[in-house]
Length: 234
Image (tube, rainbow, N blue to C red; front, side, top):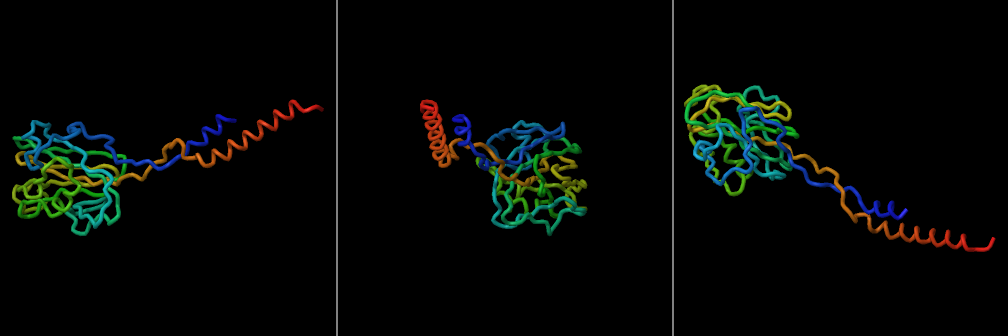
């Protein structure tokens, strides 16, 4: 009985959760954590890192304004100019870059345990990353200096007529962000916005203490009553 009472002091309370990487394609390296550096088109090359890499940025950020992205699930002709993640959405962010000294074309992907809400990846026709890059830098990791928003050809050259046009593309399928790009120096980068999962129940010892006091009183009363019956004459 006493054991059951003690167990009653353990109750389930919400515990925080984050969207985590489940898998990446074999040509992608997960960096945990990234080295303190300048985030630009040669971030990987300058820091002797693998030529395609991804790292986590900020987690559990609640958006205070709509966040523009270049593609969402079902986008047919990116970059999308009307794709926004709504105010109040809690998100996690990841940055993925492809960068090396010689030209290469690659397909790669990253899969998470929560839906991908959108990807920011597009260059404008003038060859500079679109405004969504700079507008989302508040999701960047502290300790890094973000300069990708002003880096020539540091996004994906997907629009015909863009300097260095290579028909790059990114798209969302459920929990997976997919990429096809031709890159060298500078490299091509993208920011992946993932839904932050809702809190999951977890144990908290002592949370049921108020009820425990009453149950202990009942247990003590019954114990004394039973003891009295055993010694009372029949």
